[in-house]
Length: 406
Image (cartoon, rainbow, N blue to C red; front, side):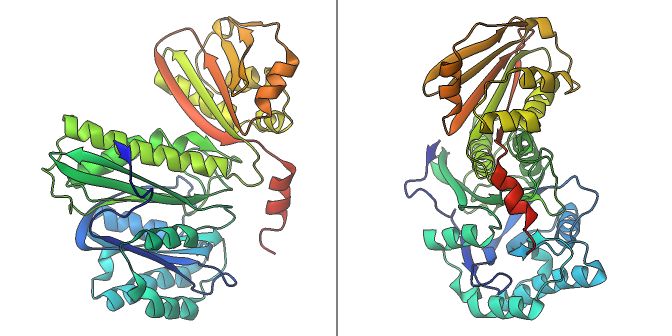
């Protein structure tokens, strides 16, 4: 597996574009991803009981086993909690794009992100589709413009591409995502769209996506909120021409590694770009008796407001870490726990086998001044492990969200 030579590329047969639908003032706010060849498609969606029209429709289409040609995405408006009109508008977008591309609307997924409870400016959006659908392109520019168009409070676009060799065929896995606030495990205010030209069965693709999401997007947290619109979609159009991958084969394991790599890098970019964030925080829990307990602990630490504010303040207050572990619901022995801070300046042990370590405060503070902060937690009780990613909680987070609507 290797990064794509041109950094970010579309897999064979895919086209993309980003354009202005006049939802936001003078910014790209709509995107289309398209493949002429039907793509087997998998999806993972928000766990929030309040779900936007796009989430409901997409789940139904994928459950019916529909082959997918396109995804149309908008930012700036979530089209959530907008009643029957919102449902109709969501379907109308797919129908209109279908007419423009001469494909059935049942082969078109929709995605929205932005403010909840506001109806879509449909006439502006339809005009945007009509004026720009011919701009769909296979080159990097199309992928980059689509990645920009799906952003809301993000400060940078997020895209990742990797290339693998299967049966002497080059297979590309590329993804774009957005997310900055309302980010919490079990899907948050984030969208992820992954494209690949691999030949794979739909059920195996769905199961692989779910596994990869559980170890990537579901292991990040910015602020503890889970949104109404979250989804990760993967489309595989088979244009690479490889032999159909079989579960547990060496080819499948390589594809799984590539998909997990793309999901993980996109998830880390979301955590890094948390609203008002100044640091990326990575928490690794290992030496655990059960994987489920390692996951609970990692998520609890990464989601703790007190841990996040300590990281922002560059304060090595490890008591907040062990406290977050204690209320995580995980089964572990506190008297075996060891905790370390790690970064470019070095490695500092703050707790060993359940007892405090004598450590140099200045050395620990130097680690916490870094943009990337790593916390290592050893439970000394087994072989299971889990890693979660998040960010610090700053003054700017409050400022951004206090006037989000206005």
